[in-house]
Image (tube, rainbow, N blue to C red; front, side, top):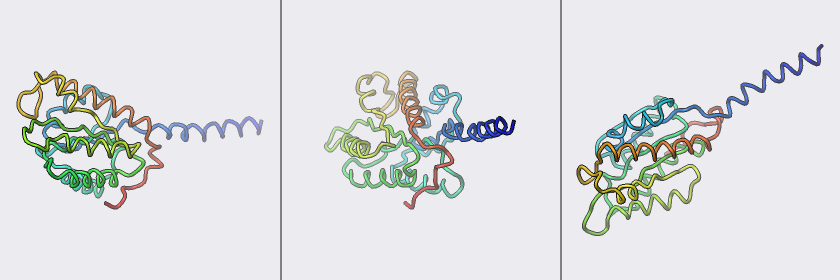
Length: 203
């Protein structure tokens, strides 16, 4: 009888540990007007997720890093973070953009996953915004916990979605939300358990 009770106790102790291995369906969206426009579409795609929003129009990547750091002082960041930033950055300063990406990743820490949408913005003179996308792609290759949504390629294939030089119509927003949601789900599957997630690293 004692052996049976011991087995039951072990099973009961193992159940919470097993459930702790699954990170919660939680997402922080920190971004610019593109993220703001995309809000209802992303919530539809991730309808069972708890989503926090932090929007600021024309937000640069450096400002995103700063604002993300400020948020850590008030609350713990969720396991998945979606960044929509870069459209307001200067393509003639790619290394400044790189520093901002790296700061965002330091703040997120190695136990969280970041989904970052790259940039489509028409610019006739060189360098174009592809300079920033190249930097983001390099940083993506260097990190397992950074996943890039190729928004540039999506818009380039559907320029009829554009309503101005940056923003898209409802069809475009649905496509963006679907792409972000796909990467967010993939991110969630690779992050470590919430109990193992430490606070943010110094930025």
